[in-house]
Length: 330
Image 1 (cartoon, rainbow, N blue to C red):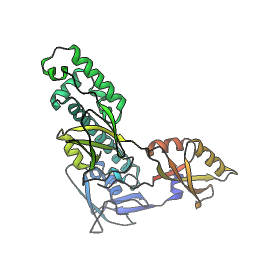
Image 2 (spheres, rainbow, N blue to C red):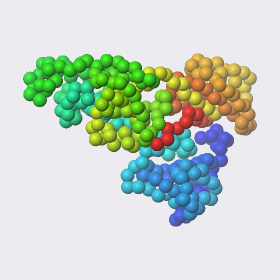
Image 3 (cartoon, helix red, strand yellow):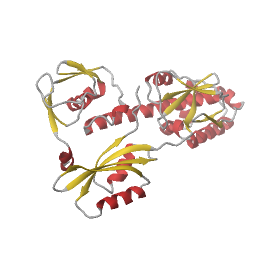
Image 4 (cartoon, rainbow, N blue to C red):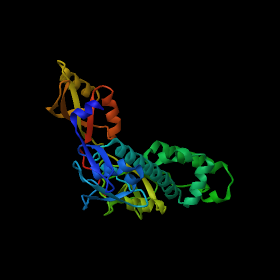
């Protein structure tokens, strides 16, 4: 986009074979990996910049020679979305993370139901198939209303169908209830005395989380934690969890101010209409014959950056939006 070019410059970097790639200024080795090929980017694990071992987040300079080390399997870098610059890298990473989250939610749904009904994973999966719930079962770990609806359908089905291997279910089960512990909201029928965090990840308020049930304890993990994924695939006992407190996300907006009287006041008014709390404004960070660029830091209840970006982009010439909250570090 031409207006973006006013705000940044391109650099040219090279592969060890001499192939050259044009990237936006500030691009990382991971941007380069995606520029070579989407599979190289998704499977990247390390980089060499000018023959020196470097992080995939190393910011590249003009004429750098970059070699990417990749694995046979894709690696998720979901916390790095705000660090890469190119749309190809962002789209590739976002797609991979979205796919993993849906897979994780689907597997977690079976684990939550098997814990609730004290049944085997295979039994619950077969029941979900019989009820025709497979297509939407991934919603269960994040929607308590959907979870309740599934429980109702299971109870209704097992009360009317004479199928031997549901005999334990037909004897009834303890109705789940809401329980608040620390910053968490649980919906379970199991005794729950305490909440613990495992050593492998440190989810922040508002991050997507999962809860494993161990004895009378809930063990919280970030939803994209590698250790959590291993436990989920192993069909470990899980319970429904979400944060019980709300979070405000912080963003930095880079916007174009056309040379027009009153444009800043108009922007601030419309940002207020979008329920954004303006924290600071920095004017004149860049200028051109057509426009002046400014940076505005805002606070929002919208935790999904792409949703907020779409809303703001409908009203303004938004050059860039960056999340100012600390990235989740696995």
